[in-house]
Image (cartoon, rainbow, N blue to C red; front, top):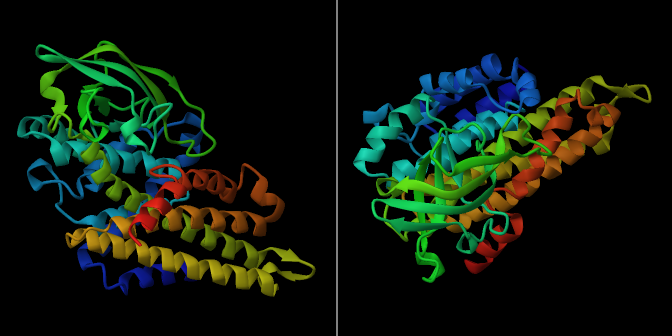
Length: 392
């Protein structure tokens, strides 16, 4: 363990936000990252997916049930535990792996845990927590992202089924998921906020297909898809929660999603700084290590301070949520600040790696590509700043 890693670990343990249980989880996730992700994930980048046996191992270790009921195999921990998982997966330097897991746990299956009936939870949650059933959430469309009210996919009730028609875009886990939480309008003529419902759609349902796998700039070890629904016949019992309440469910979980992305981003930023410190202390230029250049070490010091500030903002927002407070303002700040900061960190860290930073064999090159989406996915920075502005 490097001195920087040791300090980072000690800093987390000095935090007033975390209990011994949180730190035990942190240690467990960190060990998994070192032994099961880092040695193999370059191959997953080439393959465009995280192997199922790896996801099942994560399930076996309890990573997929952190916030879920014990009766289904969960640990019943809090928002801060989710932050620990996201931050440590972000530190892996393979954000495609991180987002595969985090979409499953905190952006998709969470809808079943929050709004599912007893029968739906009994049917799906054990497999979800075990890593046997991987979940995607299908909200975004070609013409609707953060503007959830603008979705065009429809669901028409016919007897004991709903008929879904439409398309979804940029769906993480979309190619290889087993289960999809799909947003559709059940009352196209109604008020936008009261016309959206969510449905559980199983892979193989007639009329549902993966139109194509999408080729991404970053997150290469995560599969992303465009989905198609053509007269897709979904049993009425697969309606998730109440008809017309999907918009509120989606907006409510955006807070969790944005906290997770912020934590993941700060894990990525911390890892990038650690990599760059190791590089500048050994790479020589003009007869001395780059670390001897005041401009470089002061810039890294400045970035370290910003990352620490971002990390504490994430922790505080998660603590507020865990205490039951409305943290919409703070979470929006997290998403805006951390999404931009991780890109700022990556830009300078790649710069300080010089020509090697531009090579595909360099970890920092991959991390820079991966980070770019952090200011877009889950709510673009501009949208987040408007959410903050409303609450000033």
